[in-house]
Length: 181
Image (tube, rainbow, N blue to C red; front, side, top):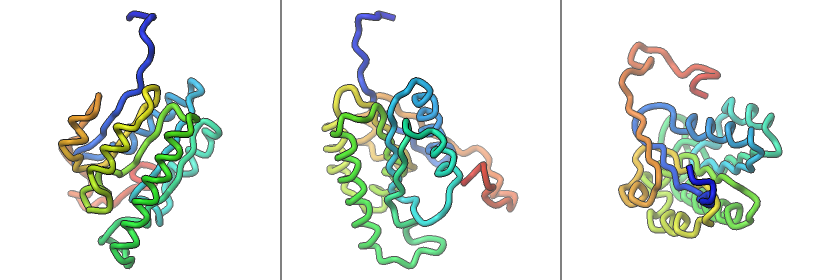
């Protein structure tokens, strides 16, 4: 490896129907925190439920900050909010993330479930592409969530697709604390 080369921030996408997209991003976050990198995670969909990663990541402060900006899962499970409320929350989260990214304080910005926010129509693909294009050269940007648009995939430096082969739900096993949430 040529040590004279300057490090360049990557745009990374974790997508697909299989589990592990957020987990992959959080794994990168843990690794980076070990090097003292500053990480900012903005969650676009998750919001109303309690997730183990929230408490786990508190232990990585001050290197890791996480912000739940979504209003919860849209149109499923126990969602009773108007769609417009979800959309406003997503737009606000993207603006918030822009401020964090332009602050110069972070090495890694993770936009958790932003692909889902676009698929649901909470955000416009063009607005997210503009965000990606505005990324400072030295910042790593991670976008997670199933259903990544081809325009986002084309713009990325690294894309990993999680593919479901088998899932415990198929046997009637529900989500497990510490494994799924």
